[in-house]
Amino acid sequence: MVIFKQLHNFAAFLPISSSLKIFTSKHSLGEHLATLRNTAKTIGFVPTMGALHQGHLSLLAIAQEQTDVVVCSIFVNPTQFNDPKDLEKYPRPIESDIEKLKQAGCDILFNPGVSEMYAANEQWHLELGELENLLEGKFRPGHYQGVTQVVYKLFDIVQPDVAFFGQKDYQQFMVIKKMVDMLKLPVRLVMCPIMREPDGLAMSSRNIHLSPEERKHALVLSKALHWLAANFEPVKISLLIKHCKEMIENEPEVELEYFEAVEPETMHPVKNNSDDLVVLIAARVGHTRLIDNIILK
Ligand code: PAF
Image (tube, helix red, strand yellow):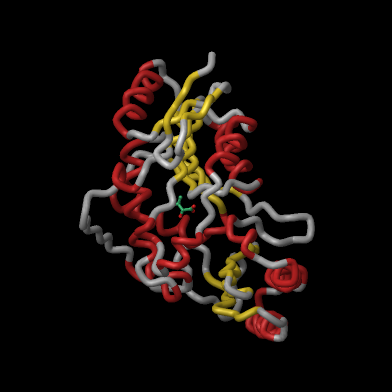
């Protein structure tokens, strides 16, 4: 069956010939999901900001394994950007994203416009405690308020049984987990592994902004993390971190923001003698901000 859907950010109508159903209105998505829930289908949810890559598709594949119906959302959420230029240049290749979702056998795409998601001058504040101001939070003030604001709304609209997020945004996962625990939201969260390019670079929608030269320099992020993992001994963690920081700081075009080993739950810095830890890095490569991490046990 060929159906025609109008997307808010398309000039024209698009013929859609796969079983992917596309909704731009929360009301019609809600109605459709209600009928699925009545037939006892479990709903998996993969929230994204689009510019889909293999990392997103791996979340979809895991969601497809674990749930009956998979909803993917594509919404570039303005409230989580603290730099208007970053928001403006965020890639929005919706046509190729739809194609990728169809190829991946995704059931439903929710692709709302900003006015569908937000009323004018809407306020939001959730007490996230220290997690909000550590690491990413320190460099992107307000970012996690915007993330929790939109994820709360998306959970409310989709009401998923299980939601899938990437480990690359480790702190985002912990923040969303905190919101789910605090507000007792009826959703199970699954953290899915980081997908990497063959040379080690963590997949990210932002990688397309890297020039070929910058992309080569960007490899120092994953190299440092993998070198640390290969040499990991809890007792020497501060020395290993020092070495990695030097490695990154000596790389041309790369400006390190943080490189820290933290306790997985609290995300407090770990100085010594911890068996479980997460090492996180953020750096600017040219004008592109990249993050990466590794979980060590
Ligand atoms: O990780 C992302 O792509 C976004 O932060 C999310 C979770 C879709 C919220 O906008």
